Image 1 (cartoon, rainbow over the protein chains, first blue to last red):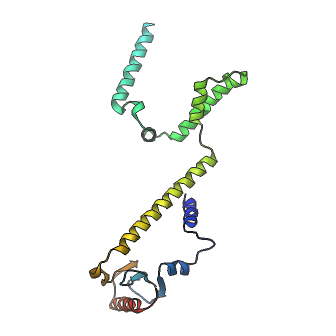
Image 2: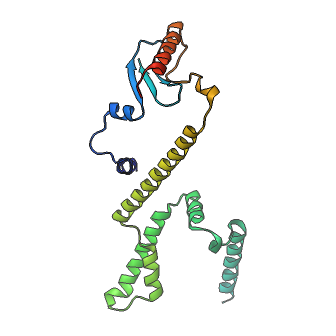
Image 3: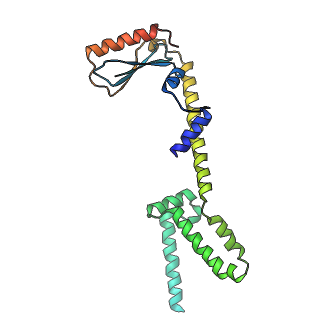
Amino acid sequence: MNKEVAIELRRRLQINGALRLDDIAKSLRLSMKEVDSDGFDGALVRRSSGVGGRILVK
Amino acid sequence: MKKKNEENRQAESFEESLEMLFGREADLTDAELDEELDACGIDAAELQANVHKQLLDYANHHYRTLDRDVPVNLEKTLRALRPHSAAEKAKAVVRTAENLVGNFLDTAKTKSAELLGTTMPTQAKQHQFAFRNKKELSTADKDLLQSEQEDVDSSDES
C-alpha cells in the first residue's frame, strides 16, 4: 500500500524524477542551517508572520 | 421418522437461539458478517475461496464434465463467490491509495486555507519552536534560538 500511496502522491503533486530536499524545503519557504546545540537535535524556527522559517540541525 | 422429526425440531430450536443471540443473518451487513467470522478466527476471504472451490468442483464433476448445463442458481452463486484475481486486488489497492491521498490533500488544502485566512495578531508575535529530541535547553540554546528567530524574521528568505 505504501508504494501505491507514494505513486499517487507523486501523480497528484506532479512530481517527476528524484526529489531533492532543498527543493522541497524551498517550496515550503524553509531554509536549513547546521548549529551547535546541546538541548535538541533539530528545531523548526517559524517566521513570526507564520509563513516559512528555518530548520536548525545539530 | 420420529427420530428425524425430533432432530429437525432441535436444529430449528438451535437456529432460533442463534438468531436471538446474534440477530438474523439476513439483517447483518457484509462487514458485520466479516467481523463475526473474524471474531471466530475465520478469514472471510479464505472461507469464500474455499466455498467457491468446492462448488466449482461440484459443478465440474456433476455437470460440465458430463456436458450438462450447470443450474442457473449454482452458476449465479459461483459468479458471486468468485475470488478476486491478483489484478483486481491490485486495482482495489490503487483505488484505496487514490482515495487516501485525495482525502489527505483535500484536508491539507482546507486546513491551510483556514490558517492563512485567520489573523491572530497577538499570536503572530509569539515565537513557536518545534523540536526533535528536545532536552533541557541551556542558556546558549535559548540565545541561539532567539538569535535565529530574529535572523529569520529580518531576513528576506521568502
